[in-house]
Length: 206
Figure 1 (cartoon, helix red, strand yellow):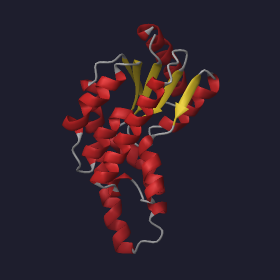
Figure 2 (cartoon, rainbow, N blue to C red):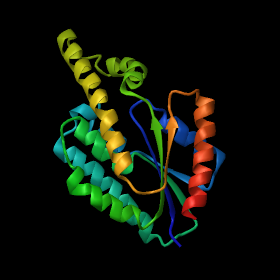
Figure 3 (tube, one colour):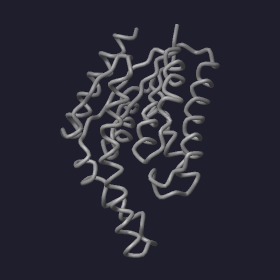
C-alpha cells in the first residue's frame, strides 16, 4: 500500500504555509514538509527566488527527490505527507529564466506515482500576489541603494507576473487527482475549502 503524499502549491503570498500549518494542526496524522526552495534560499542567504542560480535550482530539485526517495525507503504505508511546492518548483525556476521543466518534470512524476499523490492548488492572480507580498520584498532590500531597490522591486513584480501562468501550466499538465481553491477568499473560507478538497482527494486516491 502506497504512502499518501499531497502537494500544496500556488503563487507567492497565496497562503500555502499558513494553510499547511492549519491542515496539520487539525489532523496530527499529516506530516508537514518544509518547502525545499525555502530551505535552499535560507541556506544560501539570498534575498529571494529571483537571485537563485542554475545550481541553486538543481539543489532544490535534489532536495525534493532525495526526500521522496527517503520516504519511499522507510516502508511505512500508514503515513500522510503534505509537501509545499514540490514539482511546481519547475514553474518557479522558469519564471526567473531557468528552464528545467523538460529535464525533470518526468522524473518528478515518476517518483510521485510511487505514492498516492494528490494536489491542492491555491489560485490567486499575480496582481494579488504583488499587493500581498511587495512590502515584504521591500523590507528584504533594506541594505540596497535607492536605485538598486527600485530595480529589484521591478524584477520581483516581473517574476510574479511570469510565475502565475507557469504554475498553472504545471498544474494543467499533471495527471494526478487535484483540486483548485480560490485564494482570494477569506482565510476561513480557504481553510474550509481545503479541508473539503483534502477529504475528497483522500477518498479518490484510497
